[in-house]
Every structure is written in C-alpha cells, then in structure tokens.
Length: 113
View 1 (cartoon, rainbow, N blue to C red):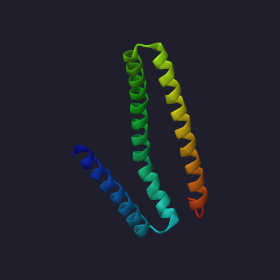
View 2: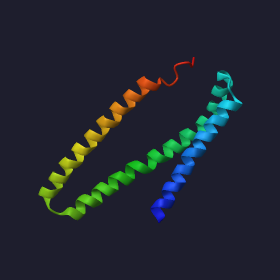
View 3: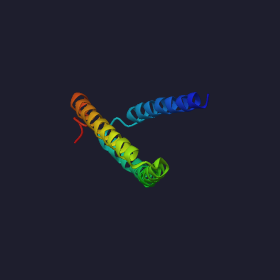
View 4: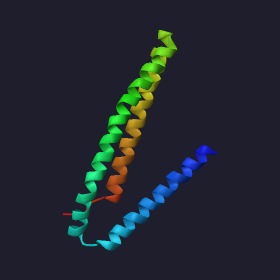
C-alpha cells in the first residue's frame, strides 16, 4: 500500500514537471527571456543537487561498511564484491549507451545559441 502511494506521488510529480515545463515554454517563448528565467531557477537547482550529492556519498559508504561488517566470511565478501562491481560496471555502461543514443536522436539544445 505504501509503495503504491509513493509511486503515485512520483507519477504526479512527473506530470507536474511536464505541465510546468509546458507552461514556462508557453509563457516565455523568446529564447533570451527563457535563458534569463533559467538563470534565476539555476540557483535552486544547484542547491538541490549539491544537497543530494552531500547525502548520497556518506549513505552509500556507510551502507557498504555495515554490509561488509555483517557478512563476516571473507570468501563471501569477495564473491559478492565481484558481483557488485560487475553489476555497477554493467549498469553504468547501459546507462551511458542509452544516454548517448537518446542525445543523438533527440538532439537537445540544437536550436539554442
């Protein structure tokens, strides 16, 4: 029940993001005005992204340390560590390839100066 509520909230947030983006495009169709407005918004986005980065690194580190400490057996730590590294590299390559394919198909920012 709780997971479904979170999914609904995320979906509503995505729809609101699309609506706000469309409204901003309709209100400020001039590229120079849009660039000025984006400059004002960039302050908040920079703060948000820096806060996320500040939280993620310690969270991942402590999760790994606690996970390894609870395993005990060094053989299983090495085996699981190898699988985790393989998964990380594979997921990174897939996301990188997907990003490169999408940016070449959609060409964002093509008409911006």
